[in-house]
Length: 465
Ligand code: SF4
Image (cartoon, rainbow, N blue to C red):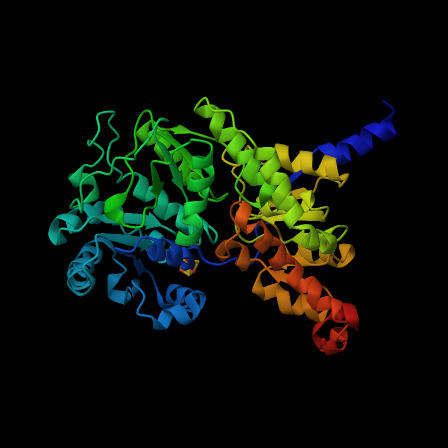
């Protein structure tokens, strides 16, 4: 192979990973308390942090903050800085109040930068508090010093995994009241369950959560439980013989906890985003249980067929994903499969072991569509990214709200990345929603050039002076 051919092969087949300064915008991980608390109906997550920590969830929750959400801030004052003694004293004052007012089945104590810096000992005080108030207390250190955005949810789920009952082969031994609190009902027996237990993890909206289970059921794979379940008291049993598989690209800590601490077997599969990802995922899971999926390719083709109108608008277009939550690679892989050029996939953190099943389909999609493999930039530098974005002029740039309007004003169409973490994008049925979301800005720009460039303040932009 001559050198030129070799170079072009490399361009199409090698994924380059780079790491920058980590100087990027993202939501604070504590903003993600919204997801688990909405999902786990009987939980109450107090966030122990300053007013600085209080503002982001208030803003991120939007109008939901007026719906008496089941979360609250416990804001330390100056007297609390000696930490541990006062921490326990304050918890003792607040927790009975929470239990009295809301009667939760679990208190999820969310730690912040403040609790880290003053070295509070939440794991130390939680068991004492638990005994005091009689309600399980789980500790999640979802601080912004260590994590980004949706990783907040990951810390909560990883903490929850410790509280799941021990799985036992004998029916009915799945629940352990000492671990999951008062049992609400007798253990459910899944009718027709044939495969060893399979627990899916990741908090999907209830409407979408049934879909991964139903897709697997079509191929005779029964899902025995979800982490998190709708109620804390329904957490699935974990233990040797249980298989676990994530539905989202970000809960990598949650993936390791059942493996290391509970002897579960992790099933690595692409994430069910786009028809290609959904098909590839089922193809990975079925053989684990000795099942050969039938009719999957045909089903995938039908979904692609149904997307025809959207494919026309995204084929040949380009995307630059700045990256603010660790799940950018899967939607990018789907977009490449649609014929869209993805210049760059920024991401705060990529766990190469947990996301190990994604690079191969991403490479395949690039090769099939004759599109160069994108570079993956971990811990991106937003300043440098903006220079690269200006050079590549994508249509659109997937970015956070901080950079969206300034980019629009400079003639770059944008798509707010936060939608990918809250919209229903999983499974065959929701592939259309991903494209709908990406093409929204394209449809807007098809309406003509509104002359945004004239609206940039020249005083503030040296490149325009
Ligand atoms: S980054 Fe730290 S200080 Fe800021 S809101 Fe998050 S936890 Fe609080």
